[in-house]
Image (tube, rainbow, N blue to C red; front, side):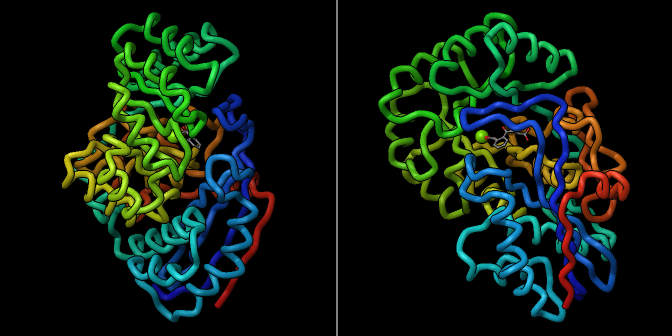
Length: 368
Ligand code: OSB
Ligand code: MG
């Protein structure tokens, strides 16, 4: 495509209920929406940073700065670029993967819309819908958790993930297991433990969980391998898998037997596909993680999750799980426990310009 410029916006979208993890509570989703402006029309992307650097070192104002100061100017330096060129152009800038991923998605969307080709087709999707799991935040107490989980099961979600932290792990998991029997259930610690907690984490083995996600720190690949040998519950990595190289290292070390793939965390949907391919060749199951995406990232995640190696249900839930109002005209909905993979050109969803404007708190346009 030939790029005319980029529009960046910071949005603040209220959540339907507070979302609590081991690292904090969110009540408003602060996110950056990217519009790539090309001679063939617009493309949309989303930078999935959160307001504070608690899940990852990236955060919204940091991404806002690095995108304007370095990443966008590097892209606008070229008269024309292909979607496949974006990552290479941005490669010299260390890190900032979520910022890079959002810019790349906007260029991919613009290019695919111009070609009349869907993102699912481009990435290699083989399903027209994907099973929908839900990530459930830490609640006031185990009884409140059971009530919240019951609501999601009644809606049709096919897999439950509960957030855990020290002191809110074994009893919470037991409460959900006891209340609902043999449902597909997994837990996510978001790096809240150390190897010294291996005894507590081993107590989770009796609940027959699908997996335990990211018990230790982002750079704890060796400790995760040590822990994995002590647990019968499969260890899945999220925060640690920042690239296809990190994924290869984790598999070689035995740090994970399941991988959560998030395009933002790994620098883009094309890198996400490379991790999918690596894991598929190694017979390691993968699933699509989420970052409370708006309708933009949610459409893209559905397309990614439809690749053949995504053999576990992802955190690809309906927009209504987090938002009363989305910024696309056809938000993802739950149908028989599944979310449909859009088939239209590019992301296959259209922006609702009024909603976009209503949630915007900062806006900038950078032109060639
Ligand atoms: O660890 O998977 C995570 C949300 C923000 C940051 C990290 C995580 C999450 C979730 C929510 O679990 C997943 C979703 O978008 O549904
Ligand atoms: Mg996680």
